[in-house]
Amino acid sequence: MLSTIHPIQTIRQLLDTGALDKTLSLLYGCSGNALVPYRARIHKALDDFIRLYAQQHSDCKDYEAIGVQIFSVSGRTELGGNHTDHQHGSVLAAGVSLDILAVAAPIDTNEIYLLSEDYAPERIALSDLDCRNEEQGTSAALIRGTAARFAALGQPVGGFIAYMTSAVLKGSGLSSSAAFEVMIGTICNDFSAQNRFSPTELAMIAQYAENVYFGKPCGLMDQMACALGGVVAIDFADPQKPQFEQVTLDLTKEGYALCIIDTGGDHADLTDEYAAIPAEMKAIAKALGADVLRDTDPALFWSNLPKLRTECGDRAVMRAIHFYADHARVSRQIQALKAQRFDDYLSLVTASGRSSVSALQNIYACHKPQQQAVSLTLALCEQLLAGKGAYRVHGGGFAGTVQAYVPLEDCAHFCKEMNAVLGENACHVLAVRAIGATALLDCVASKE
Image (cartoon, rainbow, N blue to C red; front, side):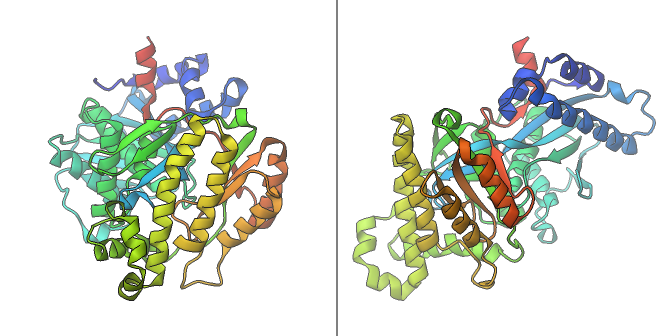
């Protein structure tokens, strides 16, 4: 399907007449007057895009007539399976109502020119897509890596100019980097590939860019959740063909709010801490004759503990214990949701959190033992929830976020107390997003 682009002035009319409201409701989980700030955000993004475009095309006679597309990619929240994806395990995840929004237009020059709000612009020449060591850890690496992967798959991308604004909190455990990667892939797919690539394939392209060009050995969960949206159970037994299914979770019906708490921890110098987890799990797998823990026999693991302790160390053994338990727990979470046994689901969430604390040990960095913002936040959750709901470390861990299921009647007090200790706006109440990576104007066209 060819990309649907409209003049900016037409998009403003669609916004003001409510023609985009159904799509916006799916993205942000609200309706009516609650959509006003989201419409205003898009109007501002269009204004900022025009300023960016004018810097490159000062001779344009009518900037409101420029044909653009608007894209949205959500952040993600991990609901089950902490650090299981890189061992080909199972996860439960969801797209959330905080997203990256992009206004983009194809251009004739052979380059990608991107400006993200509050960041320096990036200009990537599509004639030079080789991996650069000096770009590791930068957004330029992710853009170049995405374009390179498209080319390697037989679909070279054309140039485009884009302005992005993000509500996905950086370092929040909501996967702002994965959302960014999927956004670049979604624009390339829409403008250059006639949407040839499925959401799963876009997620794999994004993972390639992060692994090879960015230099981070991540799994595939974050990208899959951002690309697919909704609540999704993913099985990575075959990482080249991950199996997934959508699962229903209506938190409002159950009487709960989903809160993500930014612990305010220091994210600097954590790459080695993150990398040690898959490395130690793989060391156990190798000692058992496999590449990843999913392909090992848990019974063989338990019967070889003395040998594994000697060869791999106790922490690696503990992290393997966490994998076996949390991987199995995901299927039980799915079964509980399908059977509408929400209390059982919450108990499993709590068990996952305890396993992360005691076995996975991704609560604070070993080289910064005095900084324990995640530990403190977990203790606050226990105190404030007083046996109700559930809570757990969320995402990579060490200095990121904590996830809490809070009874609706307690939510305002819970957020107030969290913010009082951790800082203003530390506690965020999220909605599960119904749809995945999206070109908004394609949605409008499909309804016409």
